[in-house]
Structures are given as C-alpha cells and as structure tokens.
Figure 1 (cartoon, rainbow, N blue to C red):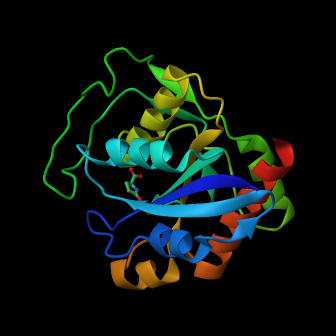
Figure 2 (cartoon, rainbow, N blue to C red; figure 1 turned 45 degrees about the vertical axis):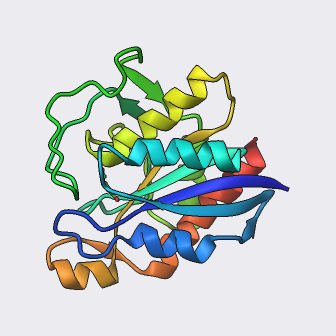
Figure 3 (cartoon, protein in one colour; figure 1 turned 90 degrees about the vertical axis):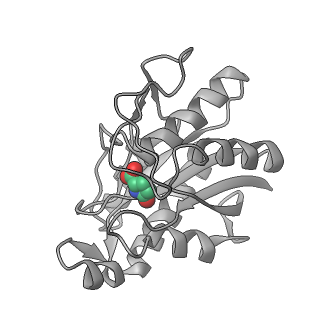
Length: 203
Ligand code: PCA
C-alpha cells in the first residue's frame, strides 16, 4: 500500500477554528483507494511551516503529498493550479511579517501542481460538490507550503505528486466568525476523500 502525506494547518488570523485540522485528524491512518493516510498539522509560521513539511516528507517518504488550507470566504473546494515564489501578507501566528519576499532565490517564479486538479474538480462536480480549479493560492502560508513542497520534489528529482487544496469554512467556524460562507464538516471531508480517490485512480 502507498502512503499519502496529508497536511492541514492550525487556526490563524481571525479564524478561530481551522477546519483542515479536524479533517486531517479524522483521516489519519485511514485507507483511501491505494493510499494509507499519514496526517500532520502545520504551523502558520513562515519560518517553520515549509521546514516542517520537508521534515515530514523526509521521515515518511510518502508516495504523494496533499496539503489542505482554509480559504475563508471561498464558496467551493478549490484545488490550486499554481504556487508562486513570493511570501507576502498579514503577520503569521508568531508575528513574522513578509513583504514581497522571494521564497527560494534559486527557484523558478512558479510551480504547477502535480496533482490531477482538473480530474478532481470534475469528480467533485459529478458528486454534486461545488468545485473549481483555482489559479491563485495567494501569497500567504498556503502558497508558501505548496511552493516549498514542489521545489523540494523538483530539486531532488522526486516524481511524487504534490499540491494544495483550499477549502471553504466549516459551519462551526462560520458561526464563530460571522461573515463567511460555509460547508458542513461531513461534506468538506467527503470532498477531500473524493480528491484522494481521484489521485489514486489517475496515477
Ligand atoms: N490558510 C492560509 C494559511 C493557513 C490556512 O489554512 C492560507 O490560505 O494561506
């Protein structure tokens, strides 16, 4: 059986809950398609998040990597097409501020996801779950982690499929936050299971 590293993120900014945490915790050790899931939660910290992801990859030696992040305000499940070589945005959970900074000085301007993003979206739609391919993962921690994962794979010639999926808020978070669209936890989790099955079937 193959191993899939599935990461989520801790809460950040004014999002008191990060729905990706509960999803990855519940999917830990589950078997989905050809994959056994190994889950980890990453810190929202520019100094640490990328390093932690690479540490987990080195330790687990996964056959595929999917990272999840909250996109508070989005309505759909959005597999990300591209990660750009920029850190920028609000202070992270440890107060680090990054403005127009290059992530990797020896890296290209962008990396394309190596996950089957179109097939994932098509299958989600087939199952009645709103989804679209996103053309920007932003410039905050989610883009950072996606870029670092793909840079690492490229640098060490690994053809491990890797990429990122942004999800909307859960109802639990939306109740606390007050002003964002939301999905049920069960539907969010079902959507991620579907994406993993698609990956398992296409590769
Ligand atoms: N979402 C943020 C960082 C952590 C998370 O879950 C982002 O979109 O960058």
